[in-house]
Length: 219
Image (tube, rainbow, N blue to C red; front, side):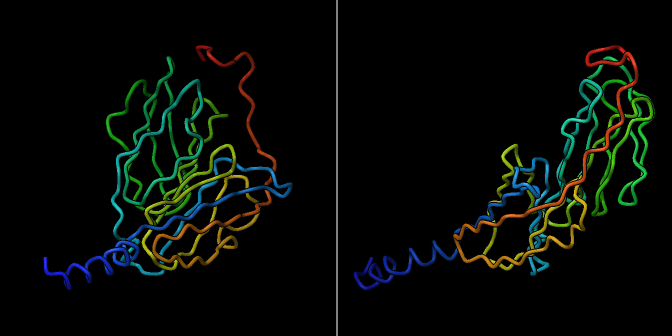
């Protein structure tokens, strides 16, 4: 390589690499007492619609274990399918009446014949006609950039392009509107942005298990 060309390459290569470096949003979600909030869905929506359209639907799975939905909250990208394997030794009847997706999987054991397509963004509340205390949530995101908080209230959305994003958070117990949590984040190439959300949470409303129905029972 000619010396002048080599010099140009050595000067420009780091700048080009930086311009292409992915960015990251690191979110922390806490409650009104600053305690970490698990199972909150953090979504980053690019202001450039073509970026959001680059996502690919996936084949997902949400289990039924010990008469509970596992995980309780499942975020998916719009257009994805979700299978509902029944790992219990009893049959379940999974359903949802949510506007984002209405469906029923009549009484079954093992794996149902077909997964369910979630083709509309929104929150889908899951239930079981046999076990009233079984409640789960599927969050269908219009953006491929999302993550769920862990026990420390932390979620990381990685491999983001350098763009402006509107970041918001949802949790099944939040008392306010998801839209009210919106924050604008402008990401430079290779930047790691930190953002904290404080949510007001209502007490969890949970139907008690039927008398005599304990973990591991046959009912």
